[in-house]
Length: 281
Image (cartoon, rainbow, N blue to C red; front, side, top):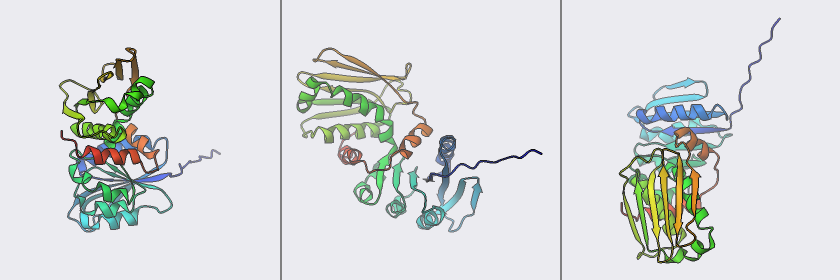
């Protein structure tokens, strides 16, 4: 006689994805890949005008289509499990219930194409949950590369002397967030020039293509090299040093997996977002 044993993976968290149908599908595919290594319960909700649309359940995934925004919080409260941490992945829709929805999230990840409307609610959201933006995660390698350059004593000493930041970006809002990070970290005065323009070439999965930071004695440049999937950083005025940093694949699965590993409030992001909103594209 043969005995078959079925192993069920223990659930480690709930991810609630809110957004239009065309943005739910790639999110669901990303969560499916992440769920292969960790147990996730996924709730996918698209907006509409229905007060009580049926919930379609497939394994650990629940799909609710056409839900009226007025009932979003009630449905999330009923569907989430209080015993599991909950991450809300906001991929678009009316911001009418976003603030209240934040009360149900241990972490809220913003991920919209035009973020100005949701960024307006940032200060309120900061006080209700651990807020971040997927753009911040996309910028992780860029921030890390520049931070390592500032470990050089000569660059660190020149931190207060930089006069101009120039960014070429495939995603202009990511450029604003990166500029906001530098402005807030280095306590720049309004006299520091910030210029953000649309990248002319292919930067691959990277949100930025190039950045230069200029001062009277130090000049820093970081370029995305999509053909080798790396960032090339150069420093002039110090020792002519160069550094190579590998890029991530930029996939949604990689990005959301990184977000799932963070539980605490990110003060650097919050300050970068507030400062970045003031930066013109």
